Length: 145
Image (cartoon, rainbow, N blue to C red; front, side):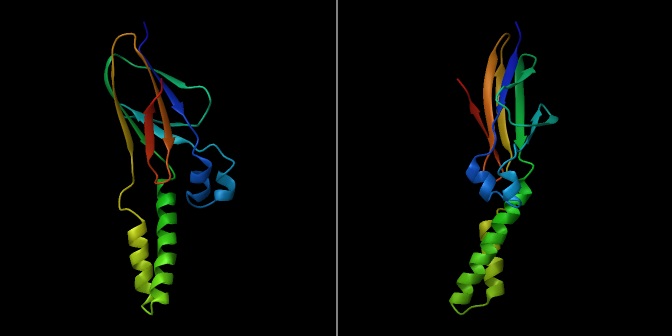
């Protein structure tokens, strides 16, 4: 029997595509890919209705996911935070530059988020996993029944 992982790659939600960084007016109509590495072998997968079928040997395997647009999402959050911080400090009579710096630092995180999933495969088992990028630039893995 075959030992397989069925990987369902989902497109980002409409909300995430709209508020997830620059070029929203183009990205809202596109299927945005994910970078998925299975045991270090990295490939780019586009969202589709059918799963990607990966034949793997029995044992423990690590699946890592990375959103290629994570840096764009982070920069967009920092820009929004800078605008809001400058407006708040300016309204309070303070320095708008320091408000922009504080707002950008508070809104953006200093790490890019990676999703990770570890699976233990036995001989003949088939595991179904769904993955989707989120608004923060990470990848969420969920088991599918």
